[in-house]
Length: 428
Image (cartoon, rainbow, N blue to C red; front, side):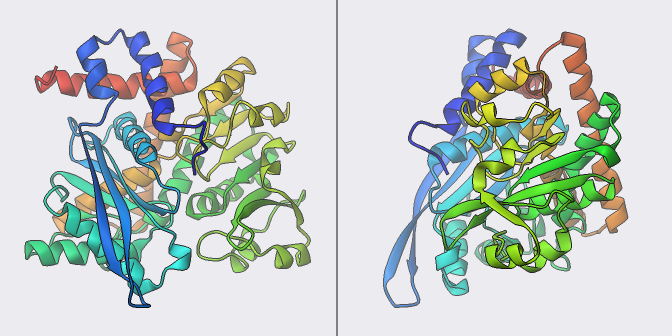
């Protein structure tokens, strides 16, 4: 997930520092906001199916809760690090603030590989994670959610453990639950759809007809698939997607110049978003190296995998025809790459704005669970569209008004809102 030379938390802090200068924040506010308020690191012992006990390392970081309970996913990944979790928690604070929902930023994780774990072993990790944090998370202080390689079943195991410990029903403790067990309709589509809601507005401003645009997407997980689905509904053409191959431990790009068929690719994709190479070739796809997605002759790039994907080196491969980068992933673009994108005047819809549909719909789920009253799917998606569109317009207006990079504009709005909340509370 992270190379030796890349530290996502240092990148998140550098992004913050740049805008803190722009906002002329005082030193105490800077110190408070550039570091997490709290973080937890712990061990989870699990008796494996073979009878042996294996110890897993878990994390939870609560970056800032001045605007409301911490909110953020739990990811299972073999290369998880505390600095990755710190960065993601910080980005969650800005994400909640930029779409103006009353939540703060948190993030969690476990160093493990679900590919090599049975369902029972994964359940024990989930329950162990909750047991370590049962006093520090909950519907009024920190609300977890799914993230990389976790899903609705994991959330339900965690909810069950939390309710067992506290002796009551607390469906608002966690989001991303199965529909029918306190989950929200529209949550599955929310992050990917949110990316396209913001992209749609950007295309309007740039005077581009979606039907005449092409796109390359990195990743083929939940975010990428639903972004592709809605983009195709707008009339756009996706010429390629990239996908991680668990067997080869590498990624590949699957290209069809006439446009990929989402439904046929879904049929040959595993539950982690891995596309079967042999079957893809049989369907007429060209199978290229994983990094080939970024060099395609398209109008739009959507990185929707992991952080640190558009780097100082890979950004040089971006085709001259690319007009927009819509960041579906968290932290996909390094500071060095950002400088190049800004110089080339490529319009960037920054991650914590573009992919905020997930946390927005998680907030909707939290509200519904706490009320024990649930909305229909159209209602959820209409509310989501309104929130994402409003947030996008505010960021774009700041971008134009102050003549600053889109990422800086989004940060300026988010950081100012959080700083004000800290000041109003008397923290600084």
